Structure formats: C-alpha cells, structure tokens
Amino acid sequence: MWYTRSYHLKRILVSYLLQYALTVTGFFQREKNTNTATDAAAVLPVQNPQKPEDFRPLENACFQNPYAFYKLIRDQAPVYRLPNGIFCISRYEDIVAVCKDVEGYSSFQQGAVAGLKPGQSIEKVGAQFALLGDLGVVPADVMATQDPPKHTVERKIGHAGLNARFVKSLEMDLERLCHETMQAFLPSGRVEFMSEFGWKMPMLMIMRVLGLPDEDFPKIKAWCVHGINSQSGVAKKHELMYSQAQVMVFVRYCWKAYLKAKSVVEQLPEEEAPENLIALLIRATQSDSHFGDKEAVSLIFQLLIAGSDSSATSMGNAIKMLVDNPDLQQTLRDDHEKIPAFIEEVFRLESAFQGHFRWTKQDRELHGVKLPRGSRIFLMWASGNRDERFWDEPDQIKLNRKNGKKHLTFGHGIHACLGRELARMEIRMVVKAFLLHTRNLRIDGDAPFVASMFARTLVRLPLAFEPLTDGQTGGNSCSAT
Image 1 (spheres, helix red, strand yellow):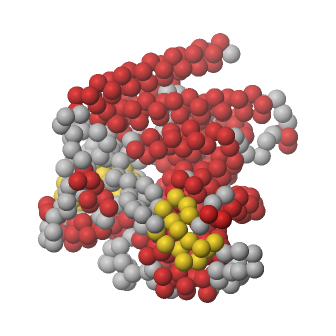
Image 2 (spheres, one colour):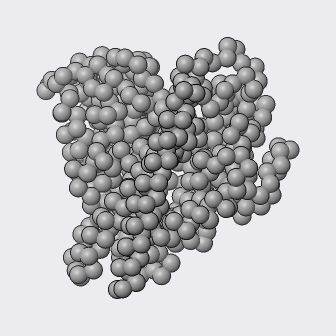
Image 3 (cartoon, one colour):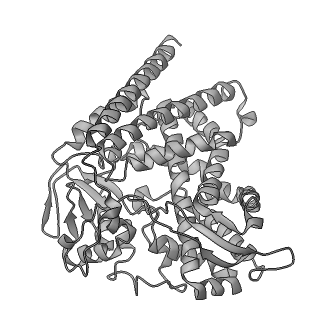
C-alpha cells in the first residue's frame, strides 16, 4: 500500500512538472518563431511533377491530394527518404513483407518516431520515454506500440474485450446513438459533419464501451487531437511541445478514471462487476502478471485515440465520396446491400491513417536502399491501397472487387486493428442513415484535409441537404448488414 501511494504521488508530481516545463518552453519557442514562420497552406504545388523531387511532400499543398506523389515514389523510389529523414515504404507487397518481419522492424516506441530530428537515436529517445511510461507519466508501450512477446499477451486481452460477439451486442446502442445525433441537426437541412456528427458518434461510443461519462466528451476529444497532432510529422517544435504537455494531462485523466473504477471492481464479486472494458482490463491485471495497471491505463489511452479519429475520419470521407459521386450515391440509395462494398472502397481509397511508423531493429536492405539499425520507417498504407501492382484500376471505386477487403487501412499482420469490425458497423450505419433521411446532399463550403503525413482527416465538412419527412424515403429500406 505504501509503495502504491508513493508511486502515484511521484507520478502526479513529475507529470505536472513536465507539463509546466513543456508548456512554458513551447510558449517561448513560439514567440521566437513568430516572425519566421511560413504558412504551408500558401505554398503552391509544382505543376506537372515528373519526379519525387518536384514535390514538397511535407507541405499542405501535397497533403490535400497526396496520391500523385505516392504513385511517383511507388514507380521511381519505392523506398523514399523524406526531408525529415524518415524512409517511406510505398508498395503493397513491400509493406506486407515489412509487417511480417517482426525481427527486423519494431513497433516499440513508434510514437517517438515522428518527432525525431535526423540523427537522433530512436533507441535513446525511446528509452527516455520508456522511463516516463514506467512512471505512468506518458502512455507505456502497449499493443500497437509493442513487440512480441508482450504484444501477444496484450492483444489477447484486447481481443477479449472487442471480439465479434461483443461488437454485435453494441448494434442497438449504436443505432440509437446515430439516430439521436442525427435528429439534432436533421430539421435544419445543414450540418458541419465533422464537429456535429463525425467526431461525436464514434467517440461517445468508445467512451461508453469503456464506461466513461458522456459529459467528458469535449475534453477527451481535445486531448485526442493533440495525441494525433504529435504524430503528424510536420508539427512545429512549439506545437509538438504543447501537444506532448496535453498528452500528459490526458494520461492523468485515464489514470483517474481507471483507479476510480478499480476501487469499485475490487470490492465486487466478478459476476457483479460493471460490464465495460475498463472492468475487463482491471480483471486482466489480477489474472496476468505480465499486464499491470500502467499497461491497462495505456490501453485505455490508445483505444480512445483510435476511437476518436479513425471512424470519424472514415465517416467524413465516406460522405464526401457520396457527394462527389452522385451516380454512385443513387446506386446505393437503390440498393443498400451494396453499402458494405462501398465502405471497403472508402477504407481503401481514403485510408484514415495514411501509414504507421516502424524502426529497424536490425540492418535491412530494400530495393537497393540500405536501412541501418535505428532507421525510421513509415509504412504507407494509403499508397499500398492504390498500388496498381496489386489492385485493378486502383483509383476507381469498384463495388465488385473480389479482393476488396485486402486493403491495408487496418494495418497488416500482428498489428491489424482490433476495432475494425466496430468501425465497419459504425460507418455502415451512418452512410445508410444519410441515404435514408436526406436527399440533394451537397457540400456547402470548403472541406480541407488536416496537414499531416499520418492522418487523412477532414478539418470540416459543411453539408446542406433536404431532410426527408416521415413517410418519405431516400432509398429502399432493406438492411445494410
């Protein structure tokens, strides 16, 4: 008991001190750079680029439509070194091969990869993060940021909480939440989809699955944005510092929620424990010596980050794709059974996460490019999803693809996303709801994407539409399942 109290006092004290130091240092760094900062959005793309060097891949003009760049590097430089020193792996088969090579490529401490400068050692910086993770100040490496054998234990626990039966049990709650969220704006005929729908529905769902209160949504969402920003690969130093400081606040919140739930669960018989994921994680710490409190808290953090962004991003991209393709929209209105195939094409064509990071544990060589131990790697899911070496007519929406589910949007191999079936169900419901309850769906304003090499997320998606009243229908009423 004394050790536990001492651990948490130290954890909280160090967290507040580091948060303060990062915030203050970031503030002065921002003031220093105010006069020299450039607006990436003002940079124009090169006309008719012929080689990778014609692009400015880490600037906003490329992020708004990166696919021409992806094709060029697939064709001319399949292992392409970005200006920030990160090696991009862009071809489908190469990405799959790297995912399978868990001896040569590591996911451990991949969260530190994006913020490193060329020449910095991922192992040294990772060791510093590991110390803070052990203390509970930042997320410890679990599941997506862990290697076997620890990853094997953690994935088994995660799968127990997000298995197919559990996801199916959420269907009625999801339908109710989708209906409630939509009714708030449907009569007006307008909605800023990302803020009023896309961010809310999946975030609230994963919060409820974890057992967190709905009223905490605004602050949890804000913290998740900082978590995603820290992986953008283009954040300025002061922005990165502030995001890292906010991540520490977020981790403290996760600890507080976890410890509060633990104090309840430990006093109850197992059959009376709350039916939520936090309770399941608490039980896992009691039965597995390799999975402790800090791993449970870090998994809560990771689930919230993933739940806040990937489904919301894919929802926004799906609705935008419907608006941009009216013939396709009508096809889906006429036959809801085609919605699942459409969703797989959304995942493939507009991957929520453009890629994930790795680093080399051993020297490797790919396409004649040497990747010494410690090299930083970016596996480009979104590029592999459009690789013409694997896909037939990769830039086209095709509802009859035989290999439609072989996209890389949920990763590949041991790190394939555990929440993929929940994401599919959420997006299917949203697409069907908009087809049933609106017509003349259109974009009413600018819909830019976030400047990030990591996430393919719409900043906003302003929509206008005609709401359908009771008795009207935006298509047939058959199930999309």
